[in-house]
Length: 290
Image (cartoon, rainbow, N blue to C red; front, side, top):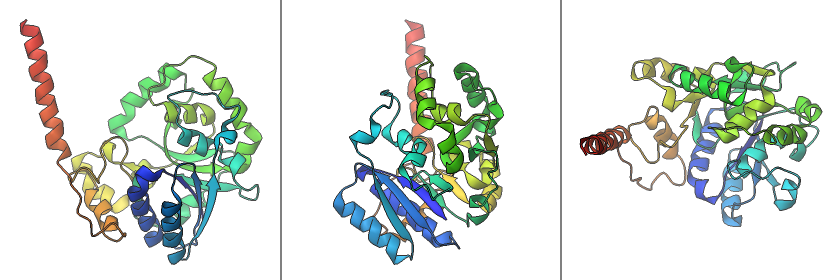
């Protein structure tokens, strides 16, 4: 199973939790391709040792400035977005597929069935958003010109058909897309969807990209039985907040890492959100009274 990941030094702790969960749950051997530009030698050594200790293979894919030559420079398109989109250019031609996974997630089940999904005729297999975010995403698709909004997916999990990517000419497509003025609300994700829309094989988000910002309280018990990839998408992360959906699942794997003995300073996300809402309502009322 070929997995593609990336992070910088600031994301070292979440990355180790992600890797711990991955190694704990897979039945197939894992080859881990790590694209990097800002990871210290010490942290690379730590990740290498952690990977090898679990019988997995780590392949480092360094990305320097020269690799970005010819790419459109946009302040709102991150380097990591380009990392994953140009995977077919960086990775060995012998690879016909790879599974990209964000670091702000945990794996809580075997991914073999998903990894071996038939990709004939599809550039990617990925998951659309759940009902909570559906309206926002439909509006976004209309604004940026997505032809098949039902295929609009979260880019944190992508099973990539590298053979098809090489035939598509990804770099030329990126240049064409970014040459047209668009108001991208979710830049990296919007760019990714504009590239592949029309050739996306959609999968069940509840299983293979369970985004915690889409989880309703009444759905949580069922999702806890279904979810194999839990994605703490957005700004609400389980290492900062203790009452997010699946926060306990993340902590289970955190405690198994080298960081596990270190206490985390976490607070209530929902209490903080309610407090900010009260402050907002108070400020609005004061403004209206003037």
